[in-house]
Image (cartoon, rainbow, N blue to C red; front, side, top):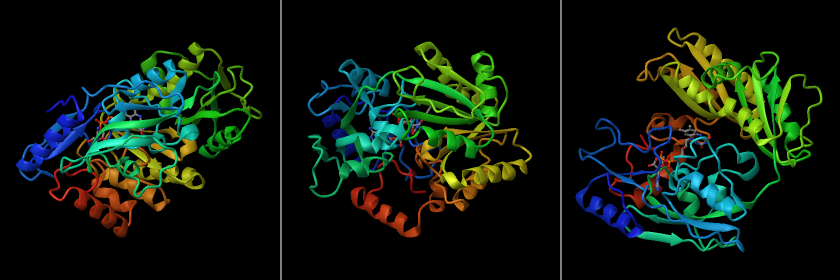
Length: 412
Ligand SMILES: Cc1cc2nc3c(=O)[nH]c(=O)nc-3n(C[C@H](O)[C@H](O)[C@H](O)COP(=O)(O)OP(=O)(O)OC[C@H]3O[C@@H](n4cnc5c(N)ncnc54)[C@H](O)[C@@H]3O)c2cc1C
């Protein structure tokens, strides 16, 4: 494991690895959920040589916020939480937020094109990247950090590196878009009877009285486990199949909520209550982690197909004797659901295949925001055509003819 302190040092490491025929695995905060930041345990993907892990955690410099442009340039090892604080101190906000914020890095979130809880308002990470600096597999450095909003000078290399999962080079710095700070927010937790009802509640708030900052959904199983790990009481009067967590930027007085016809709602107006309601959403993964080996899925399903697809996933999983618990949660406005399955052995991938095949049948994507990594490389063809995979392969082969940059990731 190498921890370079500068772009020149990253380039030197990559060149040395190229000369020695040694694979390189870029690593940020190591919070990725598809195994892209850790070398495979066996020989798969590696041509006999042990890889060098290039950890970016020493590259944490941040330039002052450029208030004229509403942008900032930072190194790739900066943690998301530090970037958010840096922007806020200057009166701006960074558009991406996710529960791994205390460890995930700017480079890792760009490499995975991370989504998170504010996509409904700000878009994915790719929409925040105005420029990039990276070391390519041959050790050359590309640096395009001016951040000009209009710059049609050929291919969008920053856009290509977003979501490349360390297979095309090591991202060393980025120029990032910032956003004006929003008014104070109100959070509401609503119980609903179906996913279609959850979508309708979200839709009532999108383009509504106040900007919709976040719209999360989770099922009764998720709430049950979140309650058990947090030691808090049941938040609503009754139990419901689905819960919707909404956050609207209405000045914090609740005026942005559209609650007509909803009979069980709890509202958080001040910071303590907002954080208390968010904890049900943010601690559910921890709840599942305490209940056994968890198979995790990060899928996109068109809104109109979501109810039927989730029902079919549950039916299919119901026929697997080893499954003891299934939970579903996600970012409802972004058509992104996470399915958590407890029971089957960690190495038993049959259940993974079943879920991903159902998603593909309903016109969904096998990866909404976590990426393909090593975990889903075998299933890429469920979401991408042979022609698309060949086009991606051609780019990979042109940039990395030795195949040394994160082998085994994206391409099986
Ligand atoms: C609790 C929790 C919640 C999460 N919530 C979300 C969520 O809401 N939305 C979401 O999209 N994701 C979520 N994630 C997963 C998410 O992908 C990661 O949190 C984050 O994007 C990865 O950043 P990282 O620095 O940890 O990267 P790592 O895990 O270190 O690496 C991830 C991938 O990026 C590559 N990489 C890392 N750094 C670089 C670099 N500098 N240059 C080139 N390649 C690099 C690695 O090789 C690997 O393929 C969550 C994870 C956890 C643990």
